[in-house]
Length: 337
Image 1: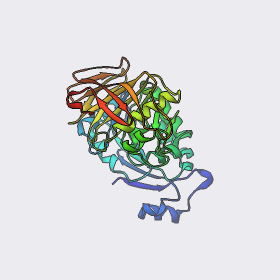
Image 2 (image 1 turned 30 degrees about the vertical axis):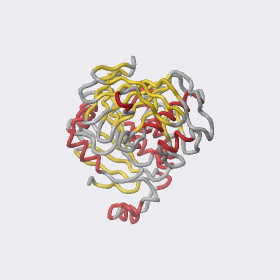
Image 3 (image 1 turned 120 degrees about the horizontal axis):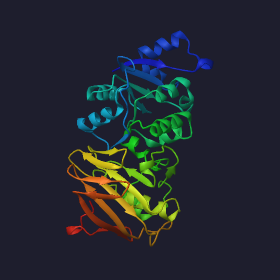
Image 4 (image 1 turned 180 degrees about the horizontal axis):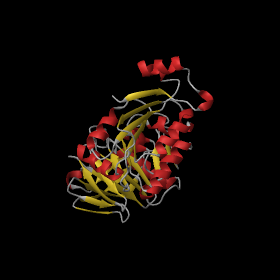
């Protein structure tokens, strides 16, 4: 683990030395009192020039190649991981991937932490930002509309790379499943598209390439296709996006999205690019979804996709529909995935 800098507060809320030493000895004791900061490596290091790119990881064990791609885009400097649970495991992962001189982790425990001057400055000086897995509702409630979100969006605008895995990927699209009322299964969502758990937020992280897009993770392993189709239906039905699109990634895989919109996959599974332009036939509270004509393009590690033109090569194209809550596919044998 990296060296924990323990509890950090702004000048008006300085921590007594004794409390700071407790944090150094047992960081877990500080969880409800302030954020924690872990740093590994030889300072910030030199930045040789960042390159815009977005690591969209589906959760689980992301490949080493994906992290090497990410740190190459950082171009040196300090890669910063932000999270609301866990510890500093990503520091070693990012340093071992190469290129960056150091890695830091900011572990948040409250929304107040997102206005701390040290936290915001650490993010602003980062050469890359990685959003760890966990519970995306923590990220929405702690970061959305705060100086932390502003700092991340400034980095994106300047062309620095940003990535996320699992919950960290879930918050990168223009639209995000917030999990405010806990998670939801495909079966539940398809049966009632207006179930309170179908909670979608927006205007959080602003990545121009992901405008009009909602992401999903652990896609096949947790059978999340049905709920993704409901997310798309709700975006159109509620007048938030048309067309509405989704990038959904298998566990153990990562979409490597370049700043020019070209995307490839790192991992043994697949990524799915879904789009709909028409309104759903039935999308009402308490009624199963009916929705036709959702286009899908699936890529493996030999395929590629252009999110600007929304077209792929070397993958598989097919169409999905939902009839009274049941998903249908034009693939041979009716395979939905």
